[in-house]
Length: 203
Image (cartoon, rainbow, N blue to C red; front, side, top):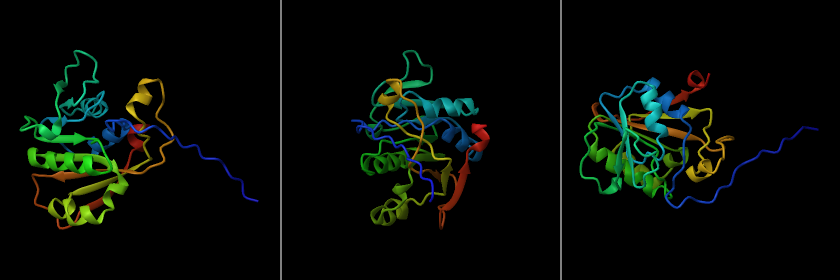
């Protein structure tokens, strides 16, 4: 008889603003394979996981959000703003974990980022975001990403409020990718699908 092991999976109450927090290793691993020229903005920075991971990797980075969650006086926090209403940014690059809102929020943030950035746009999304006839004919046909990085091992992305209450990020059960658009390069004929193995930054 085969031994079986129960697999624990967290089921969290949906966050009202879709504030879910990626582990910082996913950004540190990205910074090892993608070079950002100039400053990077995270327009939905939460408490700053992406910003601080980029800074720790030697990348100039700043953040903003619709709600201020960064500690008061944080030097990299630019202030509160609804990114969907922003008319211009001073940073050439955008790197973010956009609020998903059943994929509509993520696509809206990506489209906005592509309209503002001049360097690279990197979006952290559930791998299921790749699978959509609507996006295949829409977003990905209009703006094919240059690279898709499938992240290994699976990160855990719990709600920010869960972490603030003392919870820990562990036991990731979903697969995630970084979608990268390089606006300094010619539009690709097809996206490169690559594996982002994070063991180097986890060790």
